[in-house]
Image (cartoon, rainbow, N blue to C red; front, side):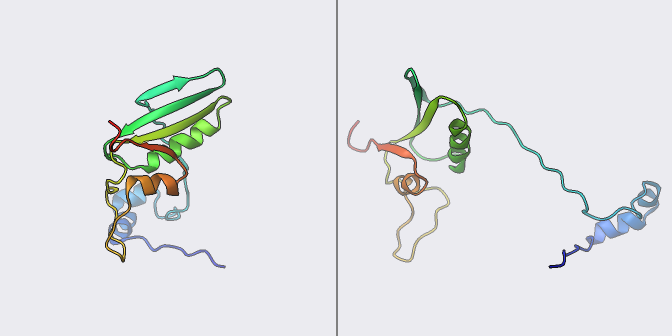
Length: 131
């Protein structure tokens, strides 16, 4: 399979042919030839942590998801690499709350926080009616 070569956009093409582009040596350069991998480190602070001798449970209390919920999947991947058994437990104020940006299904319903947690194999507690 041949690798598809992307043609430079109009501005990029004008830049390559401009005196500045020529002086920088862009005429001999290959467009989008290099790829640079990078990562961004983040810090996760759980709402509560209960530590045991060989394990820890990180409780995250949620009324609703303000941030992208996939954040918790990334945190879980990091926790799985540690020596100590650590796990995130999502505690929902009302697990039947719709997920932000969820679309209506054919039956008219939308994905709830409980359904999202089940789908992504998170342990969770639904506090509706308990508190």
